[in-house]
Image (cartoon, rainbow, N blue to C red; front, side, top):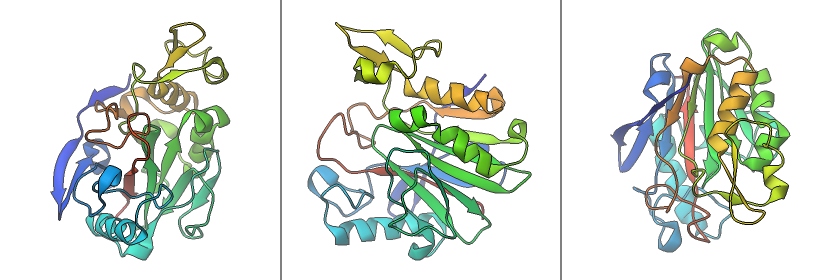
Amino acid sequence: MAHESSLKVSSRGALTVHVFSSLAALGVDAFVTDRFGGVSVGPYAALNLGDHVGDDVAAVTENRRRVATAVGVAPERLAIVRQVHGADVASVEYADPATEADALVVDGPNHAAAILVADCVPLVIASPTTRRLAVIHAGWRGLAAGVIAAAAREVGGDPQQWRVGVGPSISAEGYQVGPEVAQHFADIEGAVRDDVGDRSRVDLRRVALYQLLEVGVAGDHVTLATACTDGGDVFFSDRAERPCGRFALVARWP
């Protein structure tokens, strides 16, 4: 079964990043950013990477430059697309900032990819046989639409050999939803529990893990970050504060 783990905290320039050590064993540089080390102010302080949340564009550009440096690529080689809570997958070689996708696939060392979150589940999948990796933005809509399975098809190779990292997201205790959301995951054991009235609490990480196992990933090859976004103190949380910034899961195969 998947194992929970605290990600390794590392300093890269001004940034504090949270590294997936399990993927580093494959040679993959995959990490999660937090709120610190950037230049944004107010509710976006300080390392906001989202250019769609009302922050100063120059601040976001500088923040993204710092992340690109941290992962070892030029800013134009760090792929960030327009996420729409769907299941479309794009290749970093053909994506640009206007591309609409919720998963990015990386081939080779020339590009890095980042997906942006503030409560949704960020994931990275790496295949040692195809030397492809994917970063995935999985909110409830993306999970319901099948974004994990769509990205998995593009990664290729033997899923039993993959290594997967699941980054910080909102906890089940912090995620109250209505029946229009809960109905999508009611058949997944332990994913939904009753709350007040017609409200439920949904464990998005459990949903993501279930879907990973469904596509053939070996459970003991999945690392679940123990940190969550609740409260928004370390990682941005849309539920904790609006407006707020976005943090990133970033990955590259150097």
